[in-house]
Length: 256
Ligand SMILES: [Zn+2]
Image: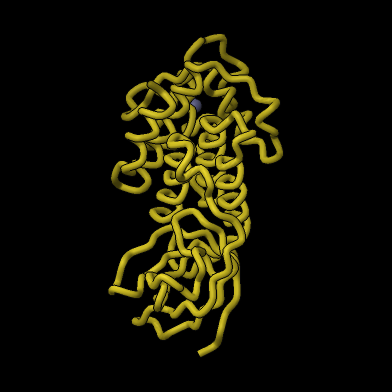
């Protein structure tokens, strides 16, 4: 049994026995892993508070054969999610991030760039100096879709491939939820699951899709944030096959 070392974010903790639990991490080098943490529920746990939702840890684990759980042997806390006890909307935002990562990634499928995005997003959501939590979530969802190969087409028509917005003076642009992107006026007719998206919202989506954009430089109205939030939540729900449970809480925290 080789011992593996990596960095990971805690996605899920399930009690297993009086003293042990089963922990799912999203790790930088191994993707999603699930490991038994023996003694984690003891008062003097060998993992010293590292095993909690949204914490980032340095871990060592033993890989078991395919049908058995890996065994966690060390977990050293690198960063705790402090807003858990002080700021509910930040906590909900963090939980939404890990819910999406849990639902949309496969075990043992490492994607270091996606890992870095997840860790950075959680870090920024937890920073009380960051005023852009709602925008951060929109940017994260777009980054996640891109990392998974599901990024919506925002410039060219998903029907014919011609550029859409810049040539049109319309206020609203057709967006195909199933087709995964914008339609030109000619291609949209007869298509199902098409929503009329405000052009301002589409421009916001393009801006947030730029890999190096700083949120300090993104101007967004409440209405386009709300419209984009609703669109992305539906988009990821379609992808997962059900509506993530944190979406209802987010709506309460950010849009009402
Ligand atoms: Zn077209």
